[in-house]
Length: 178
Length: 266
Image (cartoon, rainbow over all chains, first blue to last red; front, side, top):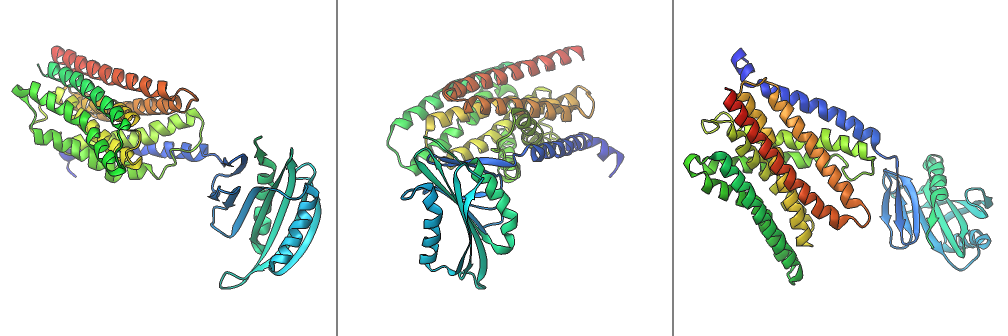
């Protein structure tokens, strides 16, 4: 490029330099200010979930999956029929009756995630993928006034440890508007 | 003479925009299908650009800029918006919940800089080196045309995305976008003219683009904040229209006075 051309396009270089610097600073600010979590709602239910998580349905409670797709499923809904203390036992019986492959109840009892909450953990094999996949599930039931809320996590067994703390945070954040 | 033409064009454009808003609200009461509503909305989106150029061209017959050249600058800005600027900005999550300060920083440094740089590019790489860009006021003329071109793309995209729903409020948005981009485009073009005709430093256009980006960010982020306030949406829409009109008028008047005083000085 000749000196004359450099001079002729000198303003372009200044604008480009300004633009690149501004964009870099702006993108860094955008990334650092990006919220790590967001609030999702369905009817009277709301929960705080990681920003990357997806709401796959909000028609009958909240159906969520993690940012990696469908391997992790979380559902939160309002249930009826049993008091809180009976929900976990009823869920265990329901799973057994549904004929989940190799279903095994791992634990059942009280949880400190929600006051007077009950929980159950279980394992089963999901036969739907080409290669049957062992999965772990955890359900938590608790009362909000006269309402019983259910939260369920289903994840691949080898990924369960990673998402269980996230699930616990989601359960703690659930609110039910009267 | 040319300054009077610009003032006339701006004034009549404001009236045309007001008429387009009234038509938009009238169409909201009519029972049209989605395709008809979208089509009418797209047609109305052209009103600010067409009105401005028609009036300016008629008033400025003595030194009229070639119609094709002004149209080409506006079209180039519109194409750059549709093909480069807005697709690039879609990579940034502009709707994310952030603090006002962070929104302002992103609005200025990302959105404002991308849009105003492309308005600059539409002038710089088309008419700037031609014999038609031969006096300081041309910076304001072609800058306004480029700004209106970019704004028209944004307005059409918004109307099509909304499937022509609520044409009245949509026309308010069209008006606000057109007025703001017209003023900011004039500012960007004016920076180029100042460098070319007044012997200003080579970085003057970059400063003009950055200044336009700052005003762009402040205006649109403030508008978004005003519209998101509970119960203030209606006030926010009309208030932002008034602010956009005032901003466009103020920028045009200041720029023309600046050029005038520089011409006297030289």
